[in-house]
Length: 497
Image (cartoon, rainbow, N blue to C red; front, side):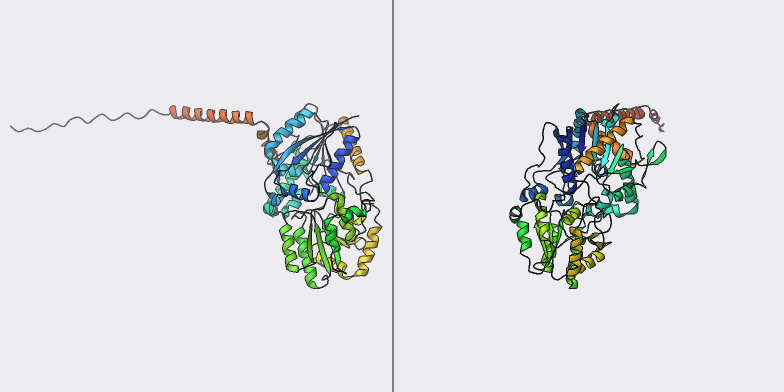
């Protein structure tokens, strides 16, 4: 049956990361297969560096335009978080989003990263209004579940490194996911992360709904060979990589240059490997943009020519071009729920040097090397740079990657099938009771003020008037002031005759 699917996301073009690529692919696929789709997406300010980098990379137009079955509802992004590359959602816009969602009348709502919405805006879009309807839509949480862990590296969230604050926000994450009928995750690591979490339903603590692993993200088998060489030759980043000195080993990183991707650790590990002497004939290339661009340039200045080179933003269409020029792929990210760039590297036959945490695709010692921290990452970079035989063996195994850990060739189709299955299960019922929490439920209820600013202003005005009237009554009903004492009687005077 034809469904009305609302897809609420915190990432979309011109910010093209792995999640945005996935959501854009899903929205297009759902629409092309006969369903009505409303995408609730972010809108970046004109002076945003996200816009600037997208234009530089030739991504000046939205790759997913509207159509009769695909519509958009946007909310503004504001602020300078992450140097402007990670702005916050404008909470005042979300009351309009709530009204737009309700008016559109979806029967299925997917929300990407509900924990981010709670952190930024006190709410999960749709829960304040849609869930109050007599027949609410099927609510599905999907994609990422490591928000609270990833943002701890951002300077703005230093306070999350204190155990009480971290525990409180972990419970906030659980409470936000506890509002949904279904939870979709990308892999077993994400499911394991959510499994121990509990929420209050009524007066008892209960587990979250079991997370379903849905392989909704994938990289085509011909990813590395589909684009003609002539197109790659026109890419500036390819020219820069081809200029490296003969015999230099090219390490490549593709992604956001940000703290939550641990690019600071990556640069530190590579610098330590270079200074050790074992990786003196290695060059680190970084393709992407973000708040840590100055850190990358400073490292290049310290280490000298052919050491660390920022390639700038590369359009996703040409990412395979730079991967073809590399000898190894490297990343220090600790909190990947899928790791699209790792799969793209394997599809191009590159050995991968990265962190063991949350890894889904790399087989340690076969297709790459996995470490636990900066020191191990330094050692593994040195090993791959210094040992050609090791590099060749790892590359051969990477070339044999068969996609067994990746999503199917029709990953968007797998997502749509899972969504429709979830809808049928919800209709069979019964619906779960909504989760609540003494702190987080109050936090989320604050957003009702934004939903009804007129009524809120009237309520505040009436409450203020009532308070002032009560204060006046209290003062006017007090005891009467004491009577003034009578004037003194005149004193007799003595007269002499």
